[in-house]
Image (cartoon, rainbow, N blue to C red; front, side, top):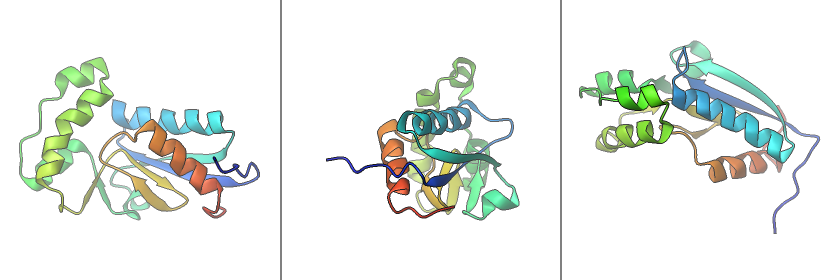
Length: 144
């Protein structure tokens, strides 16, 4: 049985991404808004930019290009995926690089922070997992 959503609670969601936003960051931001509307949740949705002081509160957040540079590997060729706006393809291209450096201490954008807790990073969140995280935030996730 699904828990009821507290319709009176406002939750804070921050999407940390690049500026200008890449298709992964833009898609993540749009997905949060879509799910909040679908669930009837009052969300204070905010964009934070990689490298800013506010984004760094949650850890050292970087773009894919910065990640590759910092771990000393070549940047995967993502030009075709970028041209098509292929979010899944971008995540698939990034995955091997991330898997080779699991302990880098870096947070790869897009990242999603819900009620001041870093919940997702490195890839566009799965829609079902993000939906569940938003629901949980309304059921005891604390007021903003």
